[in-house]
Amino acid sequence: MIKYNLEGKKFVPLSNSSAGEVGKGTVFEYHQDGDLVWADYSGGEIVSGHLIAKVLTDGSLDMRYHHVNKSGEIMLGKCVSTPEVLADGRLKFNENWQWLCGDHSTGYSEIVEVK
Image (cartoon, rainbow, N blue to C red; front, top):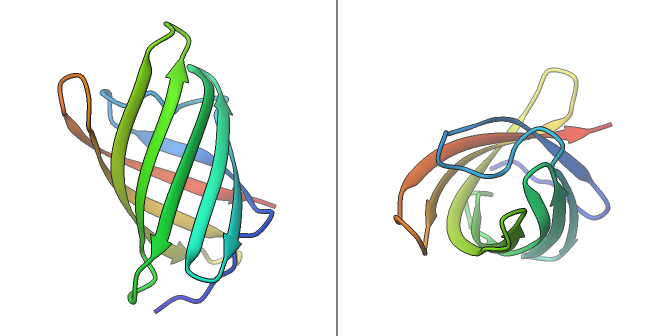
């Protein structure tokens, strides 16, 4: 298991499936208290978003998120985010997500820590 503390860390997307709304310009600002993780995110197509997650025993995050997009829609979804440590020491999360509204489609995204 990868040990980490996300308090105060910022992440940006590397990739996302076409059904996703997080993209270029989106920034996540994370916080952590023990096994509880939360973040605010905005930028790109996202006006304002929030997520909350629980750290699982394997280090992955069981997450729920919601945001308002530039079209004014409230979107919500769930995600399992698996950590990876890059060669330069930054964290990367590999994310399998699903919308809990709209078409309920699934996707895959990657976010990486900003140093």
